[in-house]
Length: 565
Ligand code: GLC
Ligand code: CA
Image (cartoon, rainbow, N blue to C red; front, side, top):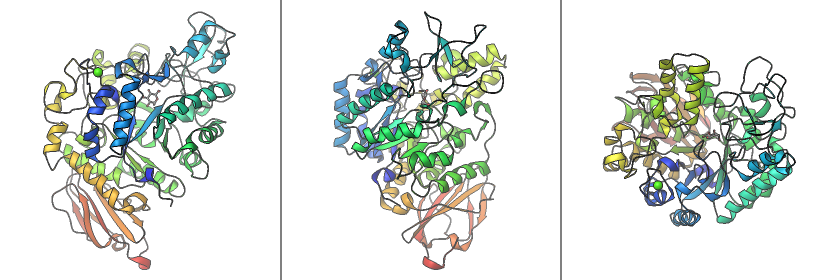
Protein backbone atom coordinates (compact mmCIF):
# COMPACT_ATOMS: atom_id res chain seq x y z
CA UNK A 1 0.00 0.00 0.00
CA UNK A 2 1.54 3.27 -1.13
CA UNK A 3 1.18 6.00 1.48
CA UNK A 4 0.15 9.35 -0.01
CA UNK A 5 -1.11 12.64 1.36
CA UNK A 6 -4.46 12.51 -0.42
CA UNK A 7 -5.25 9.11 1.07
CA UNK A 8 -4.73 10.59 4.52
CA UNK A 9 -6.73 13.73 3.77
CA UNK A 10 -10.32 14.65 4.57
CA UNK A 11 -12.06 16.72 1.91
CA UNK A 12 -14.75 19.32 2.62
CA UNK A 13 -17.10 20.30 -0.18
CA UNK A 14 -18.30 23.87 -0.44
CA UNK A 15 -21.32 24.74 -2.54
CA UNK A 16 -20.49 28.44 -2.78
CA UNK A 17 -23.96 29.72 -3.53
CA UNK A 18 -25.21 28.41 -0.19
CA UNK A 19 -22.15 28.73 2.01
CA UNK A 20 -21.76 32.35 3.14
CA UNK A 21 -22.88 35.69 1.70
CA UNK A 22 -20.44 38.50 2.40
CA UNK A 23 -22.01 41.39 0.49
CA UNK A 24 -25.70 41.19 1.34
CA UNK A 25 -27.21 40.05 -1.95
CA UNK A 26 -28.53 36.75 -0.64
CA UNK A 27 -25.99 34.68 -2.59
CA UNK A 28 -22.95 33.00 -1.10
CA UNK A 29 -19.62 34.20 -2.50
CA UNK A 30 -15.83 33.97 -2.33
CA UNK A 31 -15.64 36.70 0.31
CA UNK A 32 -17.92 34.56 2.47
CA UNK A 33 -15.67 31.54 2.08
CA UNK A 34 -12.62 33.58 3.09
CA UNK A 35 -14.44 34.60 6.25
CA UNK A 36 -15.13 31.01 7.17
CA UNK A 37 -11.72 29.48 6.51
CA UNK A 38 -10.85 29.47 10.18
CA UNK A 39 -14.01 27.50 10.86
CA UNK A 40 -12.86 24.87 8.38
CA UNK A 41 -9.33 24.86 9.68
CA UNK A 42 -10.70 24.34 13.18
CA UNK A 43 -12.81 21.43 11.96
CA UNK A 44 -9.57 19.85 10.81
CA UNK A 45 -10.17 19.15 7.12
CA UNK A 46 -7.21 19.28 4.72
CA UNK A 47 -8.74 19.90 1.32
CA UNK A 48 -11.60 22.05 0.09
CA UNK A 49 -13.50 21.07 -3.02
CA UNK A 50 -15.20 24.12 -4.42
CA UNK A 51 -18.24 23.50 -6.58
CA UNK A 52 -17.98 25.64 -9.76
CA UNK A 53 -17.22 29.33 -9.35
CA UNK A 54 -16.68 30.15 -13.03
CA UNK A 55 -18.71 32.53 -15.16
CA UNK A 56 -22.09 30.95 -15.76
CA UNK A 57 -25.67 31.86 -16.63
CA UNK A 58 -26.63 29.52 -13.77
CA UNK A 59 -29.11 27.32 -15.50
CA UNK A 60 -27.63 24.50 -13.41
CA UNK A 61 -26.02 26.63 -10.69
CA UNK A 62 -22.58 26.95 -12.21
CA UNK A 63 -22.38 23.50 -13.80
CA UNK A 64 -23.07 25.31 -17.07
CA UNK A 65 -19.95 27.35 -17.74
CA UNK A 66 -19.66 30.21 -20.21
CA UNK A 67 -16.09 31.22 -19.33
CA UNK A 68 -13.73 28.81 -17.60
CA UNK A 69 -11.12 31.43 -16.79
CA UNK A 70 -13.36 34.06 -15.18
CA UNK A 71 -15.18 34.12 -11.86
CA UNK A 72 -18.98 34.20 -11.73
CA UNK A 73 -19.92 37.82 -11.11
CA UNK A 74 -22.19 36.94 -8.20
CA UNK A 75 -19.33 35.13 -6.49
CA UNK A 76 -16.70 37.86 -6.81
CA UNK A 77 -13.58 38.64 -8.80
CA UNK A 78 -10.36 36.93 -9.81
CA UNK A 79 -8.54 39.07 -7.24
CA UNK A 80 -10.78 37.61 -4.57
CA UNK A 81 -10.08 34.14 -5.86
CA UNK A 82 -6.35 34.76 -5.62
CA UNK A 83 -6.85 36.03 -2.10
CA UNK A 84 -8.91 32.97 -1.21
CA UNK A 85 -6.28 30.56 -2.52
CA UNK A 86 -3.54 32.40 -0.66
CA UNK A 87 -5.55 32.46 2.56
CA UNK A 88 -6.18 28.73 2.22
CA UNK A 89 -2.54 27.89 1.63
CA UNK A 90 -1.53 30.04 4.58
CA UNK A 91 -3.74 27.79 6.71
CA UNK A 92 -2.43 24.58 5.20
CA UNK A 93 -5.67 23.96 3.33
CA UNK A 94 -5.55 22.68 -0.23
CA UNK A 95 -7.96 23.60 -3.00
CA UNK A 96 -9.65 21.25 -5.40
CA UNK A 97 -11.49 22.90 -8.30
CA UNK A 98 -14.55 21.51 -10.03
CA UNK A 99 -13.77 20.77 -13.67
CA UNK A 100 -16.97 20.64 -15.72
CA UNK A 101 -15.88 19.73 -19.21
CA UNK A 102 -18.28 17.09 -20.45
CA UNK A 103 -20.37 20.07 -21.51
CA UNK A 104 -20.28 23.86 -21.60
CA UNK A 105 -23.02 26.42 -21.28
CA UNK A 106 -24.88 27.21 -24.50
CA UNK A 107 -23.73 30.78 -23.81
CA UNK A 108 -20.08 29.79 -24.11
CA UNK A 109 -18.43 31.57 -27.08
CA UNK A 110 -17.58 28.20 -28.67
CA UNK A 111 -21.21 27.20 -28.78
CA UNK A 112 -22.33 30.65 -29.88
CA UNK A 113 -19.82 30.52 -32.74
CA UNK A 114 -21.03 27.04 -33.65
CA UNK A 115 -24.63 28.24 -33.83
CA UNK A 116 -23.78 31.27 -35.91
CA UNK A 117 -21.88 29.54 -38.68
CA UNK A 118 -22.35 26.02 -39.95
CA UNK A 119 -18.82 26.05 -41.31
CA UNK A 120 -17.26 27.25 -38.11
CA UNK A 121 -14.61 24.92 -36.69
CA UNK A 122 -16.52 25.21 -33.41
CA UNK A 123 -19.38 23.26 -34.93
CA UNK A 124 -17.38 20.08 -34.37
CA UNK A 125 -16.73 21.01 -30.74
CA UNK A 126 -20.25 19.75 -30.08
CA UNK A 127 -22.62 17.09 -31.41
CA UNK A 128 -24.79 18.59 -34.14
CA UNK A 129 -26.85 16.03 -36.04
CA UNK A 130 -29.78 15.92 -38.46
CA UNK A 131 -33.12 14.84 -37.07
CA UNK A 132 -35.01 11.76 -38.22
CA UNK A 133 -37.89 12.00 -40.67
CA UNK A 134 -41.17 13.11 -39.15
CA UNK A 135 -39.64 15.86 -37.04
CA UNK A 136 -37.95 13.42 -34.68
CA UNK A 137 -34.63 14.00 -32.93
CA UNK A 138 -31.50 12.15 -34.14
CA UNK A 139 -31.95 9.34 -31.60
CA UNK A 140 -34.14 8.31 -28.68
CA UNK A 141 -31.83 9.33 -25.85
CA UNK A 142 -33.25 11.33 -23.00
CA UNK A 143 -31.37 13.74 -20.79
CA UNK A 144 -30.53 13.19 -17.14
CA UNK A 145 -32.99 15.90 -16.29
CA UNK A 146 -35.91 14.44 -18.23
CA UNK A 147 -37.14 15.04 -21.79
CA UNK A 148 -35.10 14.42 -24.95
CA UNK A 149 -31.31 14.80 -24.94
CA UNK A 150 -31.62 16.72 -28.23
CA UNK A 151 -32.59 20.31 -28.80
CA UNK A 152 -33.14 21.89 -32.17
CA UNK A 153 -30.82 24.79 -32.83
CA UNK A 154 -32.73 28.07 -32.65
CA UNK A 155 -32.10 28.98 -36.28
CA UNK A 156 -31.16 26.10 -38.51
CA UNK A 157 -32.17 22.55 -39.05
CA UNK A 158 -29.97 20.43 -36.85
CA UNK A 159 -30.20 19.24 -33.30
CA UNK A 160 -27.47 19.32 -30.67
CA UNK A 161 -26.85 16.79 -27.90
CA UNK A 162 -27.19 17.66 -24.21
CA UNK A 163 -27.09 14.93 -21.58
CA UNK A 164 -28.18 17.51 -18.98
CA UNK A 165 -30.26 20.67 -19.59
CA UNK A 166 -30.64 22.13 -23.06
CA UNK A 167 -28.36 24.91 -21.86
CA UNK A 168 -25.55 22.37 -21.34
CA UNK A 169 -24.48 21.12 -24.80
CA UNK A 170 -22.07 18.17 -24.68
CA UNK A 171 -18.52 18.68 -25.90
CA UNK A 172 -17.09 16.40 -28.57
CA UNK A 173 -13.89 15.08 -27.02
CA UNK A 174 -13.02 13.15 -30.16
CA UNK A 175 -12.04 16.50 -31.62
CA UNK A 176 -8.39 17.08 -30.58
CA UNK A 177 -8.95 20.85 -30.44
CA UNK A 178 -11.52 20.36 -27.70
CA UNK A 179 -9.01 18.43 -25.65
CA UNK A 180 -6.39 21.12 -26.22
CA UNK A 181 -8.86 23.75 -24.97
CA UNK A 182 -9.53 21.70 -21.84
CA UNK A 183 -5.81 21.34 -21.12
CA UNK A 184 -5.37 25.06 -21.64
CA UNK A 185 -8.05 25.72 -19.01
CA UNK A 186 -6.51 23.20 -16.63
CA UNK A 187 -3.10 24.76 -17.14
CA UNK A 188 -4.51 28.18 -16.31
CA UNK A 189 -5.72 26.96 -12.89
CA UNK A 190 -2.66 24.79 -12.33
CA UNK A 191 -0.49 27.86 -12.83
CA UNK A 192 -2.50 29.65 -10.19
CA UNK A 193 -1.37 27.00 -7.77
CA UNK A 194 -4.49 24.96 -7.08
CA UNK A 195 -4.07 21.45 -5.70
CA UNK A 196 -6.44 19.23 -7.59
CA UNK A 197 -9.57 18.66 -9.62
CA UNK A 198 -12.96 17.09 -9.05
CA UNK A 199 -14.14 16.16 -12.51
CA UNK A 200 -17.81 16.40 -13.33
CA UNK A 201 -19.33 13.30 -15.03
CA UNK A 202 -15.93 12.64 -16.52
CA UNK A 203 -16.73 9.08 -17.60
CA UNK A 204 -19.17 10.54 -20.16
CA UNK A 205 -16.59 12.25 -22.34
CA UNK A 206 -16.28 9.49 -24.93
CA UNK A 207 -19.51 8.65 -26.73
CA UNK A 208 -20.22 5.64 -28.97
CA UNK A 209 -19.26 6.67 -32.48
CA UNK A 210 -22.65 6.51 -34.20
CA UNK A 211 -24.73 7.66 -31.23
CA UNK A 212 -27.03 4.67 -31.74
CA UNK A 213 -30.66 4.46 -30.65
CA UNK A 214 -31.43 2.56 -27.49
CA UNK A 215 -33.06 -0.73 -28.46
CA UNK A 216 -36.47 -0.17 -26.87
CA UNK A 217 -38.98 2.48 -27.89
CA UNK A 218 -39.38 5.70 -25.97
CA UNK A 219 -36.78 8.04 -24.55
CA UNK A 220 -34.01 6.37 -22.61
CA UNK A 221 -30.98 7.29 -20.65
CA UNK A 222 -28.52 5.77 -23.11
CA UNK A 223 -25.89 4.96 -20.52
CA UNK A 224 -24.25 2.14 -22.52
CA UNK A 225 -23.52 4.60 -25.33
CA UNK A 226 -22.07 7.47 -23.39
CA UNK A 227 -20.67 6.12 -20.12
CA UNK A 228 -17.14 4.64 -20.07
CA UNK A 229 -16.96 4.96 -23.86
CA UNK A 230 -14.32 3.69 -26.27
CA UNK A 231 -11.67 6.41 -25.77
CA UNK A 232 -12.24 7.51 -22.21
CA UNK A 233 -9.05 5.98 -20.81
CA UNK A 234 -6.98 7.26 -23.69
CA UNK A 235 -8.23 10.80 -23.05
CA UNK A 236 -7.69 10.63 -19.30
CA UNK A 237 -4.19 9.29 -19.76
CA UNK A 238 -3.47 12.10 -22.18
CA UNK A 239 -4.84 14.60 -19.63
CA UNK A 240 -2.67 13.02 -16.97
CA UNK A 241 0.46 13.26 -19.15
CA UNK A 242 -0.26 16.83 -20.12
CA UNK A 243 -1.53 18.31 -16.84
CA UNK A 244 -2.05 16.09 -13.84
CA UNK A 245 1.47 14.69 -13.77
CA UNK A 246 2.88 18.19 -13.31
CA UNK A 247 1.92 18.23 -9.63
CA UNK A 248 1.10 15.98 -6.73
CA UNK A 249 -2.59 16.66 -7.33
CA UNK A 250 -5.63 15.15 -5.72
CA UNK A 251 -8.12 14.04 -8.38
CA UNK A 252 -11.55 12.48 -8.25
CA UNK A 253 -13.80 11.71 -11.17
CA UNK A 254 -17.55 11.80 -10.73
CA UNK A 255 -18.83 8.69 -12.47
CA UNK A 256 -22.46 7.82 -12.78
CA UNK A 257 -22.67 4.17 -13.90
CA UNK A 258 -19.29 2.71 -13.16
CA UNK A 259 -18.51 -0.84 -12.10
CA UNK A 260 -15.70 -1.75 -9.73
CA UNK A 261 -13.79 -3.26 -12.67
CA UNK A 262 -14.05 0.00 -14.57
CA UNK A 263 -13.15 1.98 -11.46
CA UNK A 264 -9.97 -0.09 -11.18
CA UNK A 265 -9.03 1.03 -14.68
CA UNK A 266 -9.66 4.67 -13.81
CA UNK A 267 -7.83 4.63 -10.50
CA UNK A 268 -5.07 2.02 -10.57
CA UNK A 269 -1.82 3.73 -9.66
CA UNK A 270 0.03 2.17 -12.59
CA UNK A 271 -2.40 3.54 -15.15
CA UNK A 272 -1.94 7.26 -14.46
CA UNK A 273 -5.50 8.42 -14.84
CA UNK A 274 -7.26 9.54 -11.62
CA UNK A 275 -6.81 9.00 -7.88
CA UNK A 276 -10.41 8.08 -7.13
CA UNK A 277 -13.91 8.01 -8.52
CA UNK A 278 -17.25 8.94 -7.01
CA UNK A 279 -19.35 5.86 -7.56
CA UNK A 280 -23.14 6.14 -7.40
CA UNK A 281 -23.93 2.54 -6.63
CA UNK A 282 -24.81 3.27 -3.00
CA UNK A 283 -26.85 6.29 -4.10
CA UNK A 284 -29.24 3.93 -5.89
CA UNK A 285 -29.88 1.72 -2.85
CA UNK A 286 -33.18 3.49 -2.30
CA UNK A 287 -34.17 3.76 -5.96
CA UNK A 288 -35.73 1.45 -8.50
CA UNK A 289 -32.92 0.80 -10.96
CA UNK A 290 -31.15 4.05 -11.72
CA UNK A 291 -34.32 6.15 -11.57
CA UNK A 292 -33.75 8.15 -8.43
CA UNK A 293 -37.33 9.42 -8.31
CA UNK A 294 -38.74 5.89 -7.95
CA UNK A 295 -38.21 5.40 -4.28
CA UNK A 296 -37.86 2.21 -2.31
CA UNK A 297 -36.65 1.54 1.22
CA UNK A 298 -32.91 0.87 1.32
CA UNK A 299 -31.75 -2.35 2.99
CA UNK A 300 -28.76 -2.76 5.26
CA UNK A 301 -27.88 -6.07 3.60
CA UNK A 302 -27.56 -4.30 0.25
CA UNK A 303 -25.66 -1.39 1.73
CA UNK A 304 -23.15 -3.83 3.21
CA UNK A 305 -22.89 -5.67 -0.08
CA UNK A 306 -22.24 -2.49 -2.08
CA UNK A 307 -19.73 -0.94 0.30
CA UNK A 308 -18.05 -4.30 0.89
CA UNK A 309 -17.65 -4.86 -2.83
CA UNK A 310 -16.06 -1.43 -3.37
CA UNK A 311 -13.83 -1.82 -0.32
CA UNK A 312 -12.38 -5.13 -1.46
CA UNK A 313 -12.32 -4.47 -5.20
CA UNK A 314 -10.24 -1.33 -4.91
CA UNK A 315 -7.99 -2.52 -2.11
CA UNK A 316 -4.83 -3.16 -4.11
CA UNK A 317 -3.34 -0.36 -6.13
CA UNK A 318 -6.59 1.64 -6.28
CA UNK A 319 -8.43 3.88 -3.85
CA UNK A 320 -12.00 4.68 -2.78
CA UNK A 321 -13.73 7.97 -2.19
CA UNK A 322 -16.23 7.90 0.68
CA UNK A 323 -19.38 9.99 0.70
CA UNK A 324 -23.03 9.76 1.66
CA UNK A 325 -24.16 13.18 0.46
CA UNK A 326 -23.19 16.14 -1.68
CA UNK A 327 -24.88 19.01 -3.53
CA UNK A 328 -26.81 16.53 -5.71
CA UNK A 329 -28.10 14.27 -2.97
CA UNK A 330 -30.48 14.36 -0.05
CA UNK A 331 -28.97 15.02 3.38
CA UNK A 332 -27.44 11.81 4.71
CA UNK A 333 -28.99 11.98 8.18
CA UNK A 334 -32.47 12.27 6.66
CA UNK A 335 -31.81 9.52 4.16
CA UNK A 336 -29.80 6.86 5.99
CA UNK A 337 -30.25 7.93 9.61
CA UNK A 338 -33.03 9.52 11.63
CA UNK A 339 -33.49 13.28 11.37
CA UNK A 340 -35.93 13.32 14.30
CA UNK A 341 -35.36 11.84 17.74
CA UNK A 342 -31.97 10.29 16.98
CA UNK A 343 -30.58 12.96 14.69
CA UNK A 344 -27.40 13.44 16.69
CA UNK A 345 -26.74 9.75 17.34
CA UNK A 346 -27.45 8.67 13.78
CA UNK A 347 -25.43 11.48 12.19
CA UNK A 348 -22.47 10.47 14.35
CA UNK A 349 -22.97 6.80 13.52
CA UNK A 350 -22.97 7.49 9.77
CA UNK A 351 -19.92 9.70 10.16
CA UNK A 352 -18.12 6.93 12.04
CA UNK A 353 -18.96 4.61 9.19
CA UNK A 354 -17.59 6.89 6.47
CA UNK A 355 -14.47 7.85 8.34
CA UNK A 356 -13.46 4.31 9.27
CA UNK A 357 -13.67 2.72 5.85
CA UNK A 358 -10.73 2.54 3.50
CA UNK A 359 -10.75 5.60 1.26
CA UNK A 360 -10.75 9.38 1.39
CA UNK A 361 -13.80 10.79 3.22
CA UNK A 362 -15.71 13.76 1.79
CA UNK A 363 -17.78 15.99 4.05
CA UNK A 364 -20.49 18.08 2.44
CA UNK A 365 -21.09 21.49 3.99
CA UNK A 366 -23.51 21.28 6.91
CA UNK A 367 -23.06 17.52 7.25
CA UNK A 368 -20.83 18.23 10.24
CA UNK A 369 -23.83 19.96 11.86
CA UNK A 370 -26.28 17.21 11.02
CA UNK A 371 -28.24 19.46 8.67
CA UNK A 372 -31.42 17.83 7.40
CA UNK A 373 -33.66 17.70 4.33
CA UNK A 374 -36.14 20.49 3.58
CA UNK A 375 -39.83 20.33 2.65
CA UNK A 376 -41.02 23.42 0.80
CA UNK A 377 -44.80 23.76 0.64
CA UNK A 378 -45.09 24.05 -3.12
CA UNK A 379 -43.08 23.28 -6.23
CA UNK A 380 -42.72 27.02 -6.97
CA UNK A 381 -40.34 27.37 -4.05
CA UNK A 382 -37.87 24.92 -5.56
CA UNK A 383 -34.90 26.25 -7.52
CA UNK A 384 -33.17 23.16 -8.86
CA UNK A 385 -33.60 22.62 -12.60
CA UNK A 386 -33.52 18.84 -12.16
CA UNK A 387 -36.36 18.98 -9.64
CA UNK A 388 -38.40 21.45 -11.70
CA UNK A 389 -37.96 19.48 -14.93
CA UNK A 390 -38.86 16.25 -13.18
CA UNK A 391 -42.03 17.75 -11.74
CA UNK A 392 -43.06 19.15 -15.12
CA UNK A 393 -42.41 15.89 -16.93
CA UNK A 394 -43.95 13.62 -14.29
CA UNK A 395 -47.10 15.68 -13.87
CA UNK A 396 -47.77 16.99 -17.37
CA UNK A 397 -46.36 14.23 -19.58
CA UNK A 398 -46.80 11.11 -17.46
CA UNK A 399 -49.84 12.34 -15.48
CA UNK A 400 -48.44 11.18 -12.16
CA UNK A 401 -50.14 12.22 -8.95
CA UNK A 402 -48.58 15.59 -7.97
CA UNK A 403 -48.66 14.59 -4.29
CA UNK A 404 -46.57 11.51 -4.96
CA UNK A 405 -44.20 13.50 -7.12
CA UNK A 406 -43.72 15.95 -4.25
CA UNK A 407 -43.02 13.09 -1.84
CA UNK A 408 -40.22 11.94 -4.12
CA UNK A 409 -38.88 15.49 -4.29
CA UNK A 410 -38.93 15.71 -0.49
CA UNK A 411 -36.87 12.55 -0.33
CA UNK A 412 -34.49 13.04 -3.24
CA UNK A 413 -34.58 16.60 -4.57
CA UNK A 414 -31.21 18.32 -4.82
CA UNK A 415 -32.46 21.42 -3.02
CA UNK A 416 -32.39 19.32 0.16
CA UNK A 417 -28.65 19.88 0.11
CA UNK A 418 -28.73 23.44 -1.13
CA UNK A 419 -30.51 25.36 1.62
CA UNK A 420 -28.07 27.85 3.14
CA UNK A 421 -25.42 26.79 5.59
CA UNK A 422 -26.71 27.28 9.13
CA UNK A 423 -24.17 29.44 10.90
CA UNK A 424 -26.09 30.75 13.89
CA UNK A 425 -29.58 31.38 15.28
CA UNK A 426 -29.88 34.94 13.92
CA UNK A 427 -32.28 35.64 11.00
CA UNK A 428 -31.46 33.61 7.88
CA UNK A 429 -29.14 31.46 9.96
CA UNK A 430 -26.40 34.09 9.72
CA UNK A 431 -25.94 33.19 6.06
CA UNK A 432 -27.03 36.59 4.73
CA UNK A 433 -28.49 39.95 5.75
CA UNK A 434 -30.71 39.91 2.68
CA UNK A 435 -33.34 37.51 1.35
CA UNK A 436 -31.42 34.30 0.63
CA UNK A 437 -31.60 32.94 -2.92
CA UNK A 438 -33.24 29.84 -1.45
CA UNK A 439 -34.97 29.81 1.94
CA UNK A 440 -33.11 28.55 4.99
CA UNK A 441 -34.28 25.42 6.72
CA UNK A 442 -36.46 26.61 9.65
CA UNK A 443 -34.61 24.27 12.01
CA UNK A 444 -31.59 26.62 11.95
CA UNK A 445 -32.55 28.02 15.34
CA UNK A 446 -31.58 24.67 16.81
CA UNK A 447 -29.14 23.28 14.24
CA UNK A 448 -26.35 25.76 13.58
CA UNK A 449 -22.57 26.03 13.75
CA UNK A 450 -22.45 28.42 16.66
CA UNK A 451 -24.55 26.14 18.87
CA UNK A 452 -22.56 23.11 17.72
CA UNK A 453 -19.23 24.69 18.59
CA UNK A 454 -20.54 25.58 22.05
CA UNK A 455 -21.81 22.05 22.73
CA UNK A 456 -18.92 19.68 23.41
CA UNK A 457 -21.17 16.69 22.60
CA UNK A 458 -22.19 18.00 19.19
CA UNK A 459 -21.89 16.31 15.83
CA UNK A 460 -19.37 19.01 14.88
CA UNK A 461 -16.99 18.03 17.69
CA UNK A 462 -17.44 14.38 16.82
CA UNK A 463 -16.24 15.14 13.28
CA UNK A 464 -13.24 16.90 14.78
CA UNK A 465 -12.49 13.72 16.73
CA UNK A 466 -12.89 11.50 13.67
CA UNK A 467 -10.52 13.69 11.68
CA UNK A 468 -8.05 13.71 14.55
CA UNK A 469 -7.96 9.92 14.93
CA UNK A 470 -7.36 9.63 11.20
CA UNK A 471 -4.29 11.80 11.60
CA UNK A 472 -2.97 9.75 14.49
CA UNK A 473 -3.69 6.17 13.43
CA UNK A 474 -2.56 4.87 10.09
CA UNK A 475 -4.77 1.82 10.45
CA UNK A 476 -7.79 4.14 9.98
CA UNK A 477 -6.42 5.25 6.63
CA UNK A 478 -4.59 2.23 5.27
CA UNK A 479 -6.03 -0.75 7.12
CA UNK A 480 -7.60 -3.50 5.04
CA UNK A 481 -11.30 -4.23 5.31
CA UNK A 482 -12.77 -7.42 6.75
CA UNK A 483 -16.51 -7.66 7.27
CA UNK A 484 -17.68 -9.41 10.43
CA UNK A 485 -21.02 -11.15 11.04
CA UNK A 486 -22.22 -10.00 7.62
CA UNK A 487 -25.61 -11.61 8.07
CA UNK A 488 -26.51 -9.46 11.06
CA UNK A 489 -29.78 -7.68 10.23
CA UNK A 490 -29.11 -4.36 11.97
CA UNK A 491 -25.42 -4.12 12.87
CA UNK A 492 -22.64 -3.42 10.40
CA UNK A 493 -19.28 -4.54 11.80
CA UNK A 494 -15.82 -4.80 10.27
CA UNK A 495 -12.18 -4.86 11.19
CA UNK A 496 -9.24 -3.06 9.65
CA UNK A 497 -5.61 -4.13 10.06
CA UNK A 498 -2.36 -2.37 9.32
CA UNK A 499 1.19 -2.84 10.54
CA UNK A 500 0.29 -4.80 13.65
CA UNK A 501 -2.68 -2.61 14.56
CA UNK A 502 -6.28 -3.58 14.42
CA UNK A 503 -9.44 -1.54 14.42
CA UNK A 504 -12.87 -3.02 15.13
CA UNK A 505 -15.89 -0.93 14.10
CA UNK A 506 -19.39 -1.86 15.23
CA UNK A 507 -22.37 0.19 14.04
CA UNK A 508 -26.05 -0.14 14.81
CA UNK A 509 -27.86 1.28 11.78
CA UNK A 510 -31.28 1.40 13.46
CA UNK A 511 -33.11 2.80 16.46
CA UNK A 512 -33.86 -0.54 18.11
CA UNK A 513 -31.13 -1.76 20.44
CA UNK A 514 -29.27 -4.73 19.04
CA UNK A 515 -26.90 -7.42 20.23
CA UNK A 516 -24.07 -9.09 18.41
CA UNK A 517 -21.79 -12.01 19.24
CA UNK A 518 -18.46 -11.35 17.61
CA UNK A 519 -15.93 -14.03 16.76
CA UNK A 520 -13.05 -13.80 19.21
CA UNK A 521 -10.56 -13.26 16.43
CA UNK A 522 -12.18 -9.93 15.62
CA UNK A 523 -11.39 -8.38 18.97
CA UNK A 524 -8.26 -6.23 18.90
CA UNK A 525 -5.72 -7.32 21.52
CA UNK A 526 -5.93 -5.03 24.53
CA UNK A 527 -8.58 -3.13 22.58
CA UNK A 528 -9.50 0.30 23.85
CA UNK A 529 -12.30 2.49 22.66
CA UNK A 530 -11.03 4.89 20.02
CA UNK A 531 -14.31 6.68 19.42
CA UNK A 532 -18.02 6.19 20.08
CA UNK A 533 -21.22 8.19 19.98
CA UNK A 534 -22.39 7.50 23.53
CA UNK A 535 -20.67 8.74 26.65
CA UNK A 536 -19.84 5.24 27.86
CA UNK A 537 -19.21 2.31 25.57
CA UNK A 538 -19.70 -1.42 25.58
CA UNK A 539 -16.59 -3.35 26.54
CA UNK A 540 -14.43 -4.80 23.81
CA UNK A 541 -15.86 -8.26 24.28
CA UNK A 542 -17.44 -11.01 22.25
CA UNK A 543 -20.97 -10.18 23.33
CA UNK A 544 -21.90 -6.60 22.62
CA UNK A 545 -25.13 -4.72 23.08
CA UNK A 546 -25.62 -1.51 21.12
CA UNK A 547 -28.14 1.24 21.79
CA UNK A 548 -30.06 3.25 19.17
CA UNK A 549 -27.69 4.12 16.30
CA UNK A 550 -24.75 3.35 18.53
CA UNK A 551 -21.32 3.43 16.91
CA UNK A 552 -18.11 2.32 18.51
CA UNK A 553 -14.57 1.67 17.29
CA UNK A 554 -11.88 -0.17 19.24
CA UNK A 555 -8.17 -0.05 18.58
CA UNK A 556 -5.58 -2.59 19.64
CA UNK A 557 -2.99 -5.02 18.42
CA UNK A 558 -3.82 -7.34 15.55
CA UNK A 559 -2.69 -10.35 17.55
CA UNK A 560 0.05 -11.23 15.13
CA UNK A 561 0.26 -14.54 13.31
CA UNK A 562 -2.32 -16.53 15.19
CA UNK A 563 -5.27 -14.39 14.21
CA UNK A 564 -7.12 -15.44 11.09
CA UNK A 565 -10.45 -13.88 10.20
C1 GLC B 1 -22.86 16.57 -11.99
C2 GLC B 1 -23.01 17.66 -10.98
C3 GLC B 1 -24.41 18.15 -11.01
C4 GLC B 1 -24.69 18.69 -12.38
C5 GLC B 1 -24.37 17.68 -13.47
C6 GLC B 1 -24.25 18.34 -14.79
O1 GLC B 1 -23.63 15.46 -11.69
O2 GLC B 1 -22.61 17.22 -9.73
O3 GLC B 1 -24.66 19.12 -10.05
O4 GLC B 1 -26.03 19.06 -12.50
O5 GLC B 1 -23.14 17.03 -13.26
O6 GLC B 1 -23.12 19.16 -14.83
CA1 CA C 1 -23.08 37.62 -2.07
